[in-house]
Image (tube, rainbow, N blue to C red):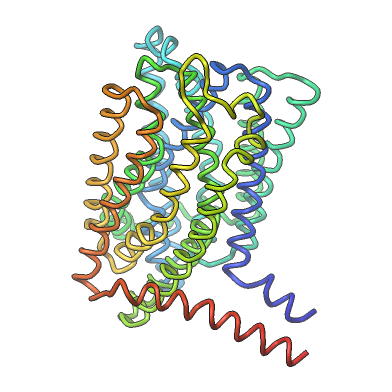
Length: 453
C-alpha cells in the first residue's frame, strides 16, 4: 500500500494522469459533438476552439515559460514579484486582445459573419477574462511541481463542461451559443475557485516590479513566438482549409484525425511538463551534465514509447475513427472525396517524430536560449504553411496536408539538434541508449520489488 501511495504521488504519474483525464473527457466530448451537430455547424465549433487556442498561445506565451524557468530557482522575495508580474502582464495582454477583437467585430461584422468565425469574435473577448485566473494558477503550480492541484483544476473545468456536452447529447440539444454560455459560466467558476484558494497570483499584482516585468518580457518575446508558432503548426492546417474553397465541411473532416493525434501527445505533454522545470533548475545551477542526462532520458524513453503508440494508432485507425465519430466517416466522403482513416495513418507516422522535436525545444528554453527555439519554430511554420498551400490549392488534398506535418517536423528535429548540439554537444546515439537504459532500470526495479515482496 505504501508503494502504491509513492507511485500515485510521483510527479510523472500525476502529470500523466491529469493529461489522460483531460484528453479522455475532451475526446469523448468531441465525439458527442461530432455525432450531434451537422457538418457545417460542427466546423464552426472547431473554428471557435482552434482560434481560441491560438490566441491563448499569445496571451500565456508572453510569461508562462519564463515564469516556470525563473521560479525554479527563485527566493521568496523574487517569487512573489515574478508571480505578480505574470498576473499583471497576462491581464494587460488579455485586455489588448479583447479590445482588438471587439473592434474587428464591429468594423468587419459582415465578413466575419460569413467566414465561420462569428462565434469566436463574439464570445472569446469575454472568455479570455474569465479563464485568465485559473490559467495563471496552472503555470504557477507547474513551476512548483504541484501536479495534484493542477489535476484538480483541470478536472473541475473540463469535467463540468463534459457534463454539459453529455446533457446536450442526451437531453437538451443545445445551440452553439448555449454551449458557449455554459463554457463561460464554468470558466468563471473555476477561476473564482483558484482566486479564493490563492493559487492564481492575482493578489500579488501589486508586488510586480519593473525588474521582474522586464525579466519575463525579455524571455517572453521569444517564447511567445515559439508558442504561437507551435500552435500554428497544429492550427494552420485548419485555418488554411477554412479559408480555402473546401470550406467548413473539410474543416470538420480534418479535425477528426487532428483530435486523434491528441491521444499520441498525452504522454508527451505529461513528461515535458515535468522535464522542463527539472532541466531549467539544473541549468540555473549550471549543472550542464544533468541537463544533458535529462534530455537523453526523456527524449529516448518517449521515442520508444511513441513507436508503440504510433504502431497501435496505424493498425487500429478505423476503430479510432469509428469510436470518435461513428461509421459515417469510415469511408471516403462522397462530397469532398477525403478519407479520414488514411489521414489518421499519416498522422501516426508523424507521431514518431514528436518526442525528439519537442525535447530539443524544451532543451533550448531550459538553457536560456529561447531566441534559438523561436528561430527553429519559425522555420517549421514556414515549411508547414508552404506545404499546406501546395497540398490544398494545387493538389486539393487533405492527405498531403497531413504529409506536410511529417516534413516540417523533420525540419524541426534537424534544426533543434543542430542548435542544441552547439550548446551541449549531444549525440543521437545516447538518446536511444538512454531510452533503453530507462526501461531496463524500470524492469530491474520491478523485478527487485517482486522478489522483495
